[in-house]
Image (cartoon, rainbow, N blue to C red; front, side, top):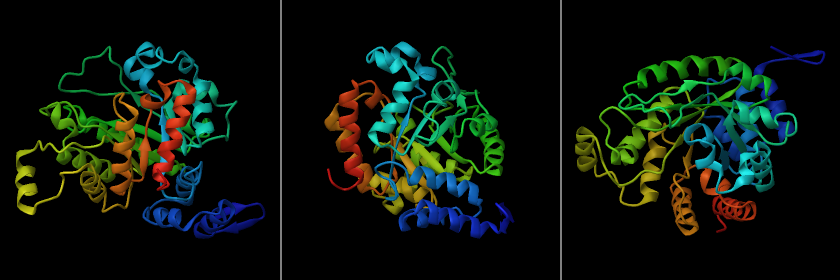
Length: 330
């Protein structure tokens, strides 16, 4: 039972009240219904992300991630657009663009937590790596924030990176299992960045369709609510899986087909999957790729460098067009 003022109501009743107050769309209700073991608190935080911004209620989402300062250093990340050194810049960019959420490490969220409290759903990135460390065959990330930090800062979710294929992958799986359990106990959602690398994986294999689908499936098995993966290439890496692809004739010749396969690999589309923007690229390449992601049935994009490394006006124009793609207009 949950106390609401002087009234005691059950969990189902609490969720129904939240749905009425937020006017949750039928599409979002259908997505939330896929998370059958989750509490009303966790579903409410997922709904906050799904119902926010210009794509609110559509079942689609665009998220701004700004964890590149940790990963690549401030100058490689922000020097091309000096305004981006300021954490407030990213909050405001995500708000003005009408995005669903903003994701960043602890210090970035703390730097704007009061000024932008309640203005946009936030995702606290709780582990990070950096380019000063050579992970070799065992790339790993350090835990740099906690579930308690996410609660203190009013975040909707925690974000955690795993490296399937790394010699350190099992440690990362155990870490997110424990942290996700704690997050769920407080009603927070879990977002997993699932990036294959390390071990015996080739560079091409990191984005091969069989490996990307496997990585997305692992994230779903670890209990992720939202899964972030890279757009897959047509390459195939695992010799045993190649035999299956050839025998069953899984269609992967187009990006649209590959996106559909990744979605199928996440419990047949029962989990939210968003695709990264990747390395800096031209506008037409970005739009064409996102059109294919949209046609493949993905839930959206989580795009950072390709927006915040551009001048603010250009970034807003690009995000506007990306949103229009997910609205089926562009």
